[in-house]
Length: 426
Image 1: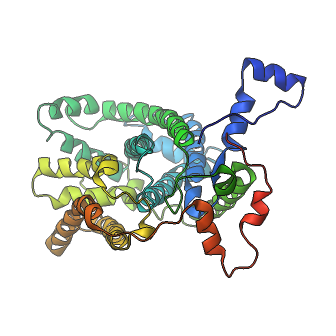
Image 2: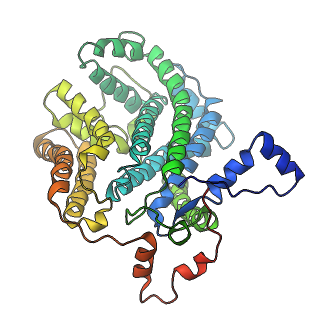
Image 3: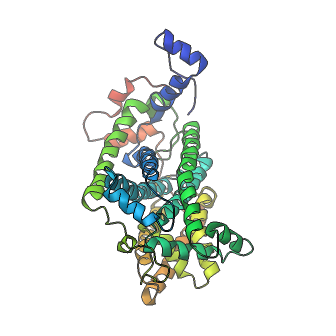
């Protein structure tokens, strides 16, 4: 999708800048003239939403750091001070804590969209792997951030999860001692988590830049999975066609975000985290944040401690190999009727695992978690085999043909207005 730049400096100053540091050209080619498939739906707006949420988390996090004290004796009090004594501190904290949940909500939709439409297939393998790396870094940042308020659930969540790493052969004890900074979760642990939690978002920002670079090099996938054949017919300029859609979706997303912040700011949290950490009092039921629950359910479904850890990390790592696991030559599940059924079963399975992760690890809940864990991994084996035997539906000849086909019976032709716009490669 990359090609000759269409940017033309409009005056002497911009020509001077462009000849020395072509940053205006870069912005123009990336966010204005860059050609995008004309059939993108609203699921393609979540990339922009995620970028917005990352910036929001970094900005609110930097402000919170100005008032937070990373010490086991003062961390809980400093958070309460932010809530009560800092001007709009309650707002900044609720934006940050609920922003983490909104960030994960958007990333899960983004991942499922990529899986449904085959956005991991060639030539987008590196793009997909970078996305998995971002997801892993997000999980690390979120886990460490959850520990910082130093409430009961923060402390015991850190104790349970870090202890699991000790089950890893050879390196487990070394990793555990590095994280703890001693013989148990205590002040050195809090300092390490604070330092890493502050650093990782900037690492995420760096990988996001690589992710966008890779996206613009290979071009965007689209709901049909058919590659661009004619830039003039199959694509439209990013601005205004995609930006208007992105802005509208972002406003709608922010309305939901604002509802949580202003009306139910603690709905996604846990009451025990408003109790100061007490190593002598174990909570009745230790659970992580909601976005970790599917993986927590997988962890508890395996009888062996080491096996649970390996399966939990394996459930994320296997996503990176999806470009080679899925053997079908057709990208979009819209044209794979059998695979589509298994995909939606996988989505339901993941949601069910999330529900089970919040339940006690006993009785029927454990049995259900084991069944769901089995299907979670079986889905990837199904994709491996299904691609060899499934007969897909006939693909449209081009993106333009798919748009025209979907517009039949809906009035004016879809291509009429957009074809008059300048179509350029950026």
